[in-house]
Length: 314
Length: 296
Image (cartoon, rainbow over all chains, first blue to last red):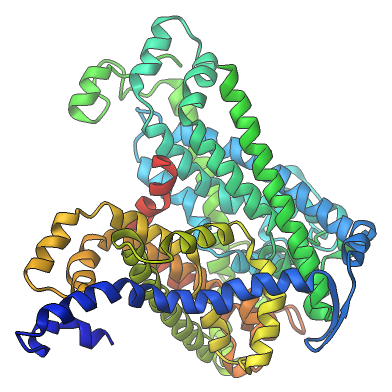
């Protein structure tokens, strides 16, 4: 089909060419979008509608389906495993937004200092861990946090005398700190690239003017820098929240497919996977999926509102 | 903390010059120390992974980084990986699947993006509305019905089962549409007057103009496909089809007597291809990463 379009003038007799010419012009956009539209309908729209259907059904494997009405959602609310997964995921998201992002912003401001030499080298070094995909960070973490052998227990033992035998991945109270640490390592530099790009577009004269007016660095930060880069902050906060709530690969490989002891590392998507593909209830998995969607939509709505309210105060 | 370079001289030279712009004050020296310390924290795990890949289990405990003196670094882990675990097969699978998936999504996204950016056609508005609406739905919602669909279509345990569902990301198409909107219509009209077909315009006019965007897109798609885990884990069942992440998780892992070095050797090989590609396309990647965020 592309061959036909590629050289229409040569193929078509001169007197008929105008009609054919118009025709290929009219048809072209349809031909261009149709491969995507066909695949999108089959593997995008159909599954979305089907998962809405499934969310109200109970399945045992792909072929036995029983209508449940709202029972899936009612069960979900009182399901202790779902609550654990929700609590873990929300905790992780909290640390991503309120610990990791401030650190990333601080790092970006440091990297934005005009006197700094080697900015690109530092920027690259901080970004480097992000080149390791989440799956692989999980494998790496499995060994780095291994009691006695791993780099992390050894480092803590060396600088602070902490017992190197602590089971970072085998003790429920250490799993979340481990996940937060690994995600800090992975994403601080990545997010600071967004902040740095935003900071570089802030007009330096604003800071000059504020300084002339006697604003302290802290006041300059709150009244000049933050308002100027607020659109980027909002985008990064929303992206981090969405990403954190979909956390799966890192804890899955890190805890070798389990949720860890006492499910301390079980996330929402992990629970979705377990319900759908280990237990075999595709219906309940869809219920979890749509609950996650609703949570994400509510959160981005709240975040937009909050940022709008802050803007209104200025 | 209040020293700032002279704003005017900075704008002229692009580099901070003047009285104390380049001077190393104690505060600045401290910040350099902080930055270098943080850099070490970022790099140490990667360096340690490389070292662990070249150590035996015994040396893993005895030496923090590389062994020296009585013991020597060894390539035994890599030998085991390729001979015992047939890791070469997994690497080839990953390369094949990643390159195919990246090419398919590049073609679909750029062709579709072109149609959305430069043509008016029936159904364009509803299509864009549906695409934007589905972008808000997390991909995990699709898992269960996609699995059911693949079972019914007989595509389980095939690469089609990963390629087809993976090709429908609306995000890439929106990226291309955005980049192509800025191509002047006059350029397209001129090509048309010269007798260029519509596909010719796409191939000879549009694609060269959005080349930086294509580079960034390919890199992002390559990394996403290379690291793809959830869908391959659900779809693939036989060892001979496993990609690198699936093989590391399902067959190698920490089986038996805790083979840390083996797992690190496999992880190292799994991390290399996207990292190498990133080095080659670095500038385009950073530009692509931040383009949407900063302007929006």
